[in-house]
Length: 435
Image 1 (cartoon, rainbow, N blue to C red):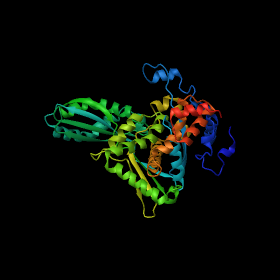
Image 2 (image 1 turned 45 degrees about the vertical axis):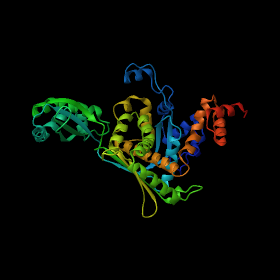
Image 3 (image 1 turned 135 degrees about the horizontal axis):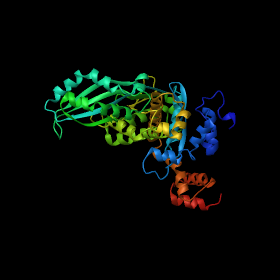
Image 4 (image 1 turned 135 degrees about the vertical axis):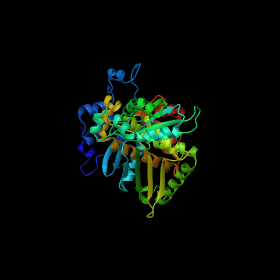
């Protein structure tokens, strides 16, 4: 194992000094020691052979191999007073470094805070061919107790854990391209699951009853990825002096961040890029833990447009003491049971690394990573510009593209950054110059 000085006893375990300067094997060793991981978990995180071909073949269709992404670890995260090392599977440079650095700054203000609502997912049952849609709605609402009881009749495990169908909603659409329709919503507490299979099964089970009650025809029976009853809120407060740079005061940086966010709040063109930056932090955690990043993306962007105009998922303000306060609110339908989270060995190892105990805890930590990523982007945009730091980290990719290997990768990357020319041609020239 690595030297105990990597994570001394008086240091929070998520703060691993010098991690970026270690070789990948030493880095994994340091992370494993800090998190207290066992051998099989370490092997799964290492990636080599982490997903046996026979398991991959059972996960999706027509398997011919496995596709890998770099797996990094974001350090320094403190959420609700607890330390986390956060696995992130992502190909884009600067993401892991930016999240880690913002988490380090956030510690000086007490770290991140997060909360979430109950894990309520929504199934939709579409009913068409109705002459009396409002009457059908009334009949469905009157049958709520019967419908809930039947929905909960099969999944005794979920009921035993305190979950299950909690209620119904009924929407009436008086006009549509095919005429009036009614949509029944089942509101289901899915506990530690993402919930798609559970709510889809309930919707399909109730279809005959819904047709009997309404006199219409059921078409779609499917969950909604706009999980607006399963919302997580993450927040952070940074004293202004924490944001001070070599050229700007903390107060100036904080004001710049607020002004940068203001454009995303009112302009959908900026909001799209602003929210993409948030998802730069969220998607890698979702992917690393074996969750459905496409569902999270869909829910996030639908939620951002819930007012009828696409807008920012975050707000940034300056409080009465001059501190910068950021808040992120969005749906977060994550699970720690079922699906790839229980099939993929690396996903299981990622959850062990984070020491996650519930789906709600995972959602809260993941949201805080998104908030950290947003802070990093806005800080860069309002100070030196986004490209300087990003291109410095991108230089390694350029060096590899130019043919650099081994120690030459860092040497060439540093040379082209120093020259201010992060291009393949400059990298090729630097590669030809002996060390």
